[in-house]
Length: 363
Image (tube, rainbow, N blue to C red; front, top):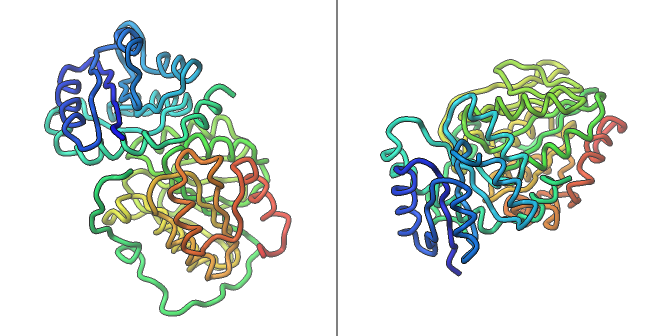
């Protein structure tokens, strides 16, 4: 089935170049490329798009107001196309909270070259959005991928252990969470429900550089626990959640009975940096049975191999169920590989995390 797309952006370059790239992509048809939401509303009266690629800062009506109107009246998958600035990151977080499916970043300068060089990422975002369970995003806002390419695995960052071995039990537990498409809203639901006394949490949310800091800051304002973008050497402590920074990998390390994180450079793994597989493998190695692994909504298979390694190392592993996912890809693949102990709805994940604190062990 052809994916019908509308581009709403006040930049003529974006409309021309991005519109052309999308229109030439197999299985995608560009319906319209318009300069502001009011013009989009007029065009949508005659034909409704399957996906909207939306700028945030535009004349006559801003993108967030338009997005909220869409989610209230007729939920539609929206990909935010935002300038990569600190100010833009804060605004884009607001858009994700309002129900956007994903972020595509664009620079202020040399837009044409950027769009052409990142065509596969842009097209992938649109394809992913088309398959999203947007009703899940709309509910929270108001209360097929490109051809496979050769992928790096977690081996490029952290070689596999020579043999499986049980980890010594410690008094501190670690919760490791991996998520992607739809994850910003899902994480908000989970983390805001946690009490101040909760186990230490490490998170990989697929997100571009600079956006993770804004995302963490926003969560920190609305959660009882402390939420921050991870910095190399940060302690994983009760009542604190560390989010891997965009453009870097995050690994768990142990020093005695305490855990901390390493933030490192390295090649993309499963087309992502940070990668869930890298985090999960390090948790399997350093925490073993002292850990809880959770894989949530997201496209692709990043995290499936790492969650299996956690399971084999004695950790309890949980996957979000299909009905509550925006995209069931990552949990589905983890379940398929046999690395999942429990499948639960999003509303139950907070209870799984709290149970870690109340048990001497995780199994």
